[in-house]
Amino acid sequence: MHTILLTGFEPFGGEQSNPSWLAVQQLDGYQLDDEVQIVSRQLSCVFEKSQQELKTAIAELKPVLVLALGQAGGRTELCFEKVAINFIDARIADNAGQQPVGAPVVAEGPAAYFTTLPIKAMVNRLKQQGIPAAVSYTAGTYVCNTVFYAMMHQLKDKPKVRAGFLHIPYAPEQAIGKAVTSMPVDMVVRALKLCLPVALQSSEDLQIVAGTLD
Ligand code: PCA
Image (cartoon, rainbow, N blue to C red; front, side):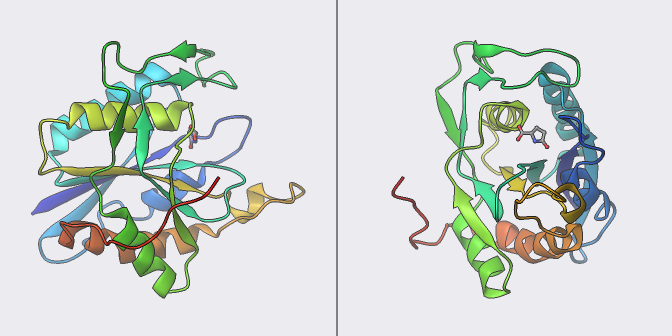
């Protein structure tokens, strides 16, 4: 049996819940097919601790694929991140009160890593099914980007393990009074069931346009 590791974060920034965890929690133990099972883990919204938690989970579970999820309130689509940067610039403190500004994730690490998931193919699959999804070229400079970078750094010599990051919009209950787009957690769950098989099967990404001009 192969394992797919999904992670979601605990709530942060004064929110009561984090849809990234609410979504992946529903898939813990779910079998994608006869050979692939999902294991879900929650990460702390804390710079240092989250990296360690992810590292431990990868070492323990030896997944064939890792997809970390995080909340990005205000985004209008499921955003599959292309690039993780070696830079932290925290606009708010993390859940342990730390607020690093202008720090590297990994001292002496390369400036950036790209995801090893076929994200255009995954986005394409979701759009075909009427689920709003896009490629994103910035994962921000907070805990999500940090975890994404640390994960790609950890897996840099394990090309067979595919890994990436998905930012998701607020859940509807979080968006009340905020005038922002939201997405039901059940839609995120359905999206994961649709795009994870694509992530496992396609070794090459699609050559289709997904870029932006600004
Ligand atoms: N989103 C934050 C950190 C945790 C989360 O769910 C981010 O985008 O960095």
